[in-house]
Image (tube, rainbow, N blue to C red; front, side, top):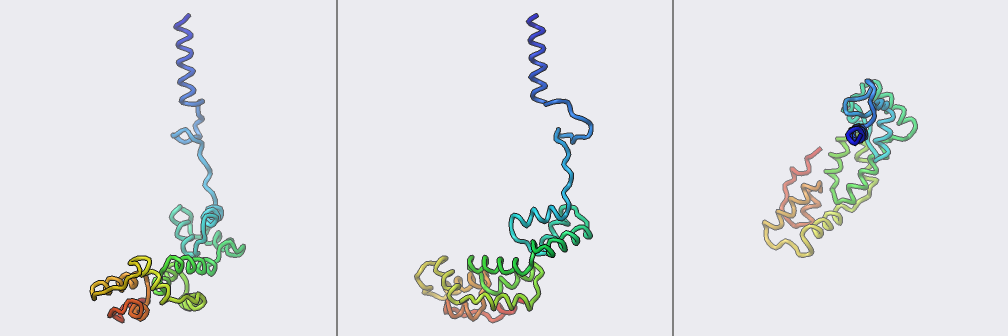
Length: 188
């Protein structure tokens, strides 16, 4: 009798660990298969987390296996409902990057990578009304402290830092008093 009770308890504990018997429709891992959400639902889910450009959403939907027509229809519907707006996205990105201390050349390139038109980028940068010189000086103070660069090598290092952050050569020159190549402004 003790053997029978022990065998039953062992069987019951094994069933608890493995769970009830699964039907053939389930996935091999033991979970029920979820239906794939529509492109609209997926894009809406992405937009719930943060703003996205139209180009960025299209790319993400393609990477997740949605065909072009379904993705385009979802993006058109989101645009018509004002859930996705490239102008709102660009303004948000611009405010965020200016607050992070990036210059106008870097902002132009980033907005261009999101599919914004050159005319709209110029307009947004003018509307931002940022004091690029003060922003560059603040970045130098944050990075290097209040002391100025005494020698040529230190001024050049500071100038390169500001150029990498996307500030124009004229702005960098006025803030660091370093000789900066004008070719740095030729970035589209």
